[in-house]
Amino acid sequence: MFWPMTAIALGFLGIAVLGVLAVKVFVEAQRLGRQVADTTSKINRAAEDLERAAVDLAGAGETLR
Image (cartoon, rainbow, N blue to C red; front, side, top):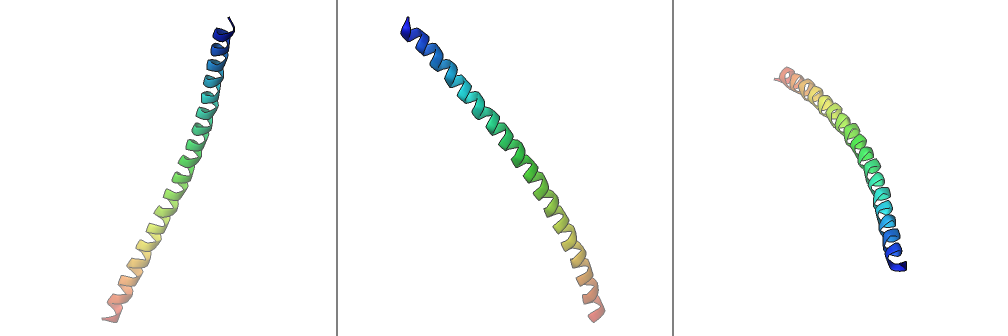
């Protein structure tokens, strides 16, 4: 009777450990998603700034002709 009870206890502990790891992975995935969203907005802002600078530079180039 000892070994079946030990197997059940170890199985429960294994499932509990997997549950804790799943929660940690979920939290880290959400954190990564927030970082990706922030970085995407920064990249978009930088692209808009670059586009404005290119338009200004093209305008300055036209005045030099």
